[in-house]
Image (cartoon, rainbow, N blue to C red; front, side):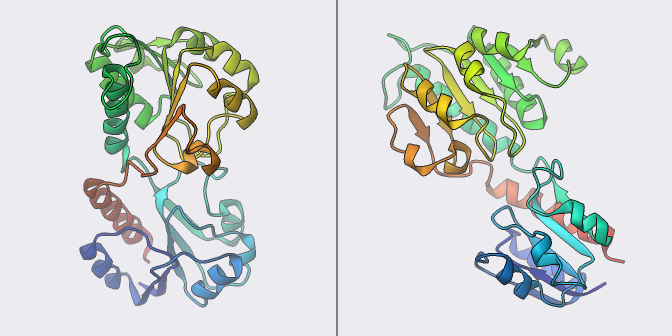
Amino acid sequence: MFKKLVAIEPVSLIPSAEKKLQDFAKEVIMYDDIPSGDEEVASRIGDADAVLLSYTSRIGRAALEKCPNVRYIGMCCSLYSPESANVDICYANERGIVVTGIRDYGDEGVVEYVISELVRCLHGFEQEAWDDIPREITGMKVGIVGLGKSGGMIADALKFFGADVAYFARSEKEAARGKGYRFLPLGELLSQSEAVFCCLNKNTVLLHEAEFGQLGNKKMLFNTGLSPAWDEAPFMKWLEGDNLCFCDTAGALGDSHLLNHPHVRCMQVSTGRTRQAFDRLSERVLANLSANCK
């Protein structure tokens, strides 16, 4: 059992899971707002040996150096790699601090969002139809950039509706080949696809000036990641064409000044944060605590 567990910000656990935290520490403190920076993060952690945080704050070296008792950090959000994490995992490893995260808890809501926005655009629901007359997803050439869990689920959903699915990833996936998905170089995928779906880890940028040139005009670009998958300058130039960009949050778009751009469709809602996602998140956070509470 931990001596003291501190959630430095809201971590989106369901009430029963919050109550369950008492089983893992003698003292539990949960903050209901986001800390302003390293000083406040360190102050909130104090002498705690276990810490929880979500995706809205960062625990870096500067804060951890002031908190020598920490031996466990539970990220109540996705953890894909040290580079994309909002915890300084390299420094934590130096200190012997265990850092855990969770994955794949909000993908279902993201898939529903993508299909919803694509259907609304193609059919012209409360907007001009993408073509002269309403059309279906059937036969549409679509490209998935990043065929991880969410990218794979989006590909499967698009195939269900009859799309012609291609993808770009670090390597060809045997399971994807079995489903009939075409593995293409990035440039070829961009030029061939009418709608492109970027499903990349945070801070992964693959679309530069050359790639936007290959993407071309009269295209739809979806970004389901937590940060932009592109360089801003060529993206801004591309937006001036007959194109549309879809993001659920301003963070995925990159800058709030683009929210009112006529070719941007941004919900400003994290579409993966559903009732079911909170249930999955809570279950996995508690499982991580249970495995590391020794």
